[in-house]
Image (cartoon, rainbow, N blue to C red; front, side, top):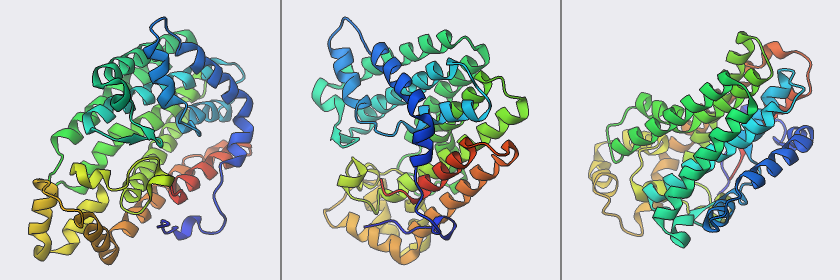
Length: 337
């Protein structure tokens, strides 16, 4: 099922073409850095890492690091090492998350822990974290190193917070947003901010690009959460309904539980709290989401954050990277995968 498009992004089909064209030489260099730093004399490490990294076609987070640096006036290659580090941090968190969540698919491939086992997946994730820090040191920017080190800590805190509040039928929207700000938006924010810092941008511009990244990351996660109830596995690269089956209290689920009223309370206790689910429960949940407008409300909020992200770029003036980053915010909301 296609996700409804918010009016704010309905005028033209959002595209990453301009951004990908601008960043093509830089991203080719980033890809080379990633490939070189995945290498290890222990064969399972590059094999397992490549299984996941090779499935990342867009590399949005490292792309954001490069774009933010170039928008801020970077002329050197320091941002390339930071971009590769960002991709390694992201990949490491995915490897760990898939073990924690017992995920079956990731990026359209069988999850790595199902092939190599959970211990190997966790340890290769640790290897990638270590490689990320080597790349950060090599970039030669202590402030950027601090930003990405802090982000690694915040992401872990967000994942633990989500784990401790899983199956919580009374989770507030405020706490939910705190979770996604930490576990998803923080790396987007740090990717953009570190790129700006590496370019020697002013504090105001670094803050603006951090704001852009954070709001983009929130919008991205909100759409992800909606797609779990409206997408299909061919587009998503993972099984729709995974969040529901795991009992994750994402915004669409929080909204539908609040809006469906007391009559459905026992249904939610059984399926989300106790996770006693039948084959028909996911379809019923999707229908209730459509009937209550929970999915559309989630997408509307995502569009609001995308608009806020674009507004953060207002002071950057005429620069080809600015409209390309604005397109990225629109794309994040309108995508179906």
